Structure formats: structure tokens, C-alpha cells
Image 1 (cartoon, helix red, strand yellow):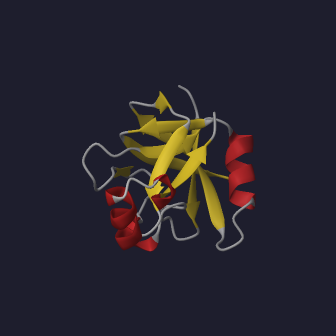
Image 2 (spheres, helix red, strand yellow):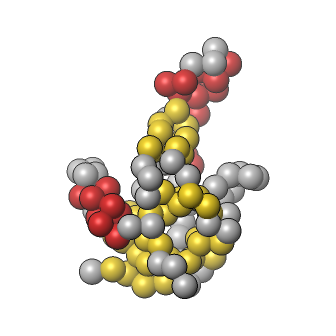
Length: 119
């Protein structure tokens, strides 16, 4: 089985989205997005997951091996930067209302299950 890696905060929450969109993860618990048709993301490369975790100075991050349901390679992941601003920008069709991750090692999934922490 292919290994994937999920970066989460020290309290097992989503690492890249604003607080109003954060999901809680658990070890051996299937986590799905709250929004229909939304995707969760993980990394296909441990070195890239580590590089991302080390580049985030605001919180302590943890990396877990994970299982991904229906994994698909994806380069661009869009996340709202702020709920009000994103709505206003989307109405004006401004692309800067979104935060983009552009990485060849990103995998999009319908659900993620954390299996074990990587040291």
C-alpha cells in the first residue's frame, strides 16, 4: 500500500486552513471534509511533508503516515483565506481570495485516516 503523509497541528487539527474551517483529526479515525465535494490533502513524499512542517513558524506541527480514500494527484489546492473576504472576492471574481498550495507531491483525498506518527 502506498504511504501518504499528513501534516497536522500539535493538537491534531488541520494545518493550512483558517480557524473557522479547521477539522479535528484522530489516530485511526476516518476524517472527512465538512463541505460536500471538498477534498483533504496529504503529501506523497515524507521529505516534502517535513519541509512544509518546518516552514510553518506559527505552530508546532506533527507528521503522520495516513491512509487516503480515493487518492488523486493534485497540484493546486484552494482554501479560503477569510470567510467574508473570500465571499466578497469571489463575487468580484478575484483570485487572491484564495490560498493556493502548488506542489507536485500533494494528493487529494475524499477522507484521511492518520495511522502512526512519524518521528
